[in-house]
Figure 1 (cartoon, rainbow, N blue to C red):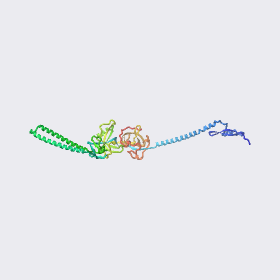
Figure 2 (cartoon, rainbow, N blue to C red):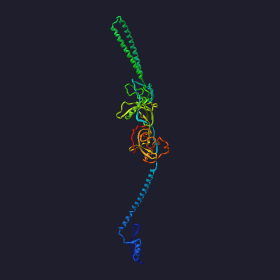
Figure 3 (cartoon, one colour):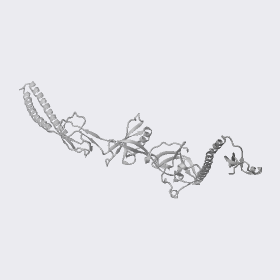
Figure 4 (cartoon, one colour):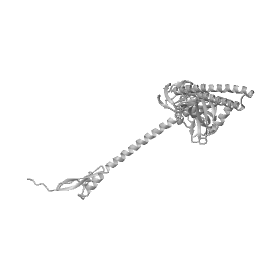
Length: 466
């Protein structure tokens, strides 16, 4: 066999891209190598084997690749985000530059009512607790609980037989005593005739005269006893003292009732008419007093507890004589006919007292009023359909309108919807349907009218736009 020359392995490094990868290439001794120029031109360079630590350094360089890729991805995401934000800001600027659609109303004149809205209590003008004035057994209950009764209707019957018997006894005693009186008077007449002829002593005549007076007193006492018996019999027949409604019975039939029992038998409450007592703050009392001194009839409307439904209409009848120092209020009473019995005693209601009516005043729709850091203002629509914040001084609120004391005049246009997106000088557009209806507020959105639709009294206040 032919012998081959011995081989020696030399570590060779191939430089490709950025990573140097060592590999072993067999070298044959005795084989003719290419010239030096050719070796220089090749991309493979032979060199002595590197130390053992060189492959370890190469592997550590390879671990930087994930970090490099991560930085590239992060830069790409940042570039895309900035581009999207720039487009968004550009769109928003275009939206701001566009005209803003709003709801509008034209300022006009009209009446504003000055109404005091106070909490009141329904109070019966006559509440009677029926008690017995005699002692006896309750024989009959002649009413149904909750029944409407008239004055004089029978309510309760108490056993009157003992009083009937006592009446008969006293009537007999009267007849007896009346006979004695007649006899005494006859004797006195005879004694006086005999005394003229001195046939009888004067002392005997005087004694007889005193005896007649005693019999007269006895007869008078008997008549009083009879009247008492008749009255007791009447008391046994208990009737309603007023027109009204009877409550739940407090004593059942068959019980023995006594005049010393103060809890009563039943309560009768007058319903027609009925009153409402409410308190008015001291700062409004003078105005109410002035109107009543002028002879004006001040109407009062009673609303339910939610202040939404009118129950009845009445008028102010009386003002209390003194003020409550703990609350600073004065009680007032209004009378209501209560024809449908809708006002119930001790019920809480809302009393709307109409004090005065301001006629032909400038008024602004309540939704147009805005409140800023410096006070109240409205957005005024100019002739060129731009808006300006206008400070206003306001007065009394009446339903959907409020008195404009200063800052506005009839014919001005104000924004009542979409005011939260406005800025001074911004261009606005008004729907054709709203622009064709001057003098009245358009559809109400956003704020709505104050007080939930109830009339309220507010003190005038200065205003500045926020």
